[in-house]
Image (cartoon, rainbow, N blue to C red; front, side, top):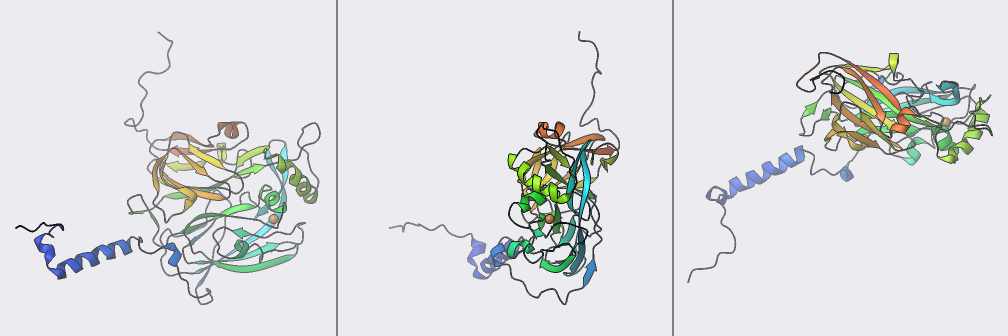
Length: 381
Ligand SMILES: [Cu+2]
């Protein structure tokens, strides 16, 4: 009687055990190479950075980024940066001002750029001319309060601390002196971002290397400017008075102003971002306190890393990208048509009535394969 066969026969060439083992090894090697078998849970680290080369990064005000390499040229480094807290009165919209609490004078603070496994060594200065205790909580850092507790500085003090950039991606940082002072300092402007690039640079949706031609950083800032009993925004004399009143006004959860890069018009008109047709632009956006949704009118995110975390495969072709409060995101777009693009918070009331709008002016030749006027405006027939 014929025996019933319950296991399928291997093809002839696989019956040879050596070939079979080599094939299995090749599959495993490929899986390891693509990072699929190494869990983030297994990450291990050595050294505190003392023996690594040190480089100084000169920070610049947003929307610009400091000088950096997209692909790390050599091994991990200690990147030394300085942030000086400045309490200063700034205009956030015509007639509306705030005692802003800032890192290095800008809202948001400057973006720091590192590669995975670099250390960031921060000198945080709180000049004696300031009135408040400040610190910094880095979402990119691993350790108690993101460095918040060890970095508390009173006016007249400075502190130096170092953290390893274990995870690639864009992350926010912010002041966190404790209690309601934490959100009050954040909504007074004290937040920014760090970009930790994978050492081998970014990858597209197929896992192939992708480089960008330029990068911009902008943050959406919600302000809760204190008002008098008639609803008129107050002109406040001192930072102490400002922060006291903001701890009350922010409880409304109703911002008086929502702007990009600190003030209305910081990214429009003569301050618009620029690009050329054919350029790939990395747009890094953060919101330290409140959810937002970013849309490039007339364009897309060709590649979008949700939460800005570069070890995840990017999504493609996004029209509007979410940023949960307390995070940053990265989108890469190749401009294909010239013109003035608006980049908005696509709650368009927040864009057009509150100020969350910027512009990107793109130069180059029109591509009629993408859009074409067939008949100009004329009377209805
Ligand atoms: Cu602060």
